Length: 90
Image 1 (cartoon, rainbow, N blue to C red):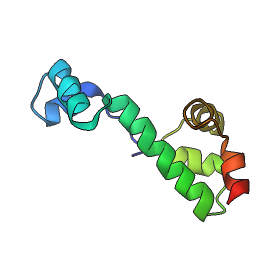
Image 2: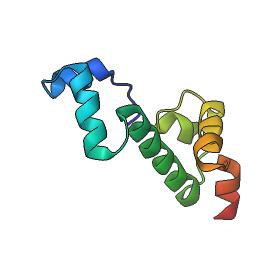
Image 3: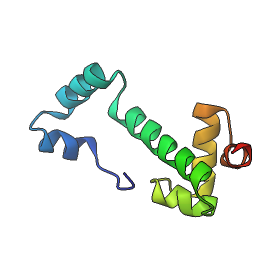
Image 4: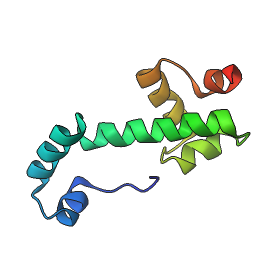
């Protein structure tokens, strides 16, 4: 989850062209691969924020974000909440 796999890598693994992989993935999951990955990472981060006392920066790195700021900005954009607000609400 924390590794960055390129579309080319995923397409090669699935033995498809990159464009066919993106199209097939989007049809199957209802969103493009990158959006799906961001959603998974945000769910994992939210779970860790609620269930652990790990520093937010550690959670960010463990879930594939480049920094605490990257996690915070992404979470605000997609969930309209910051990691701190999620943690304090739990």
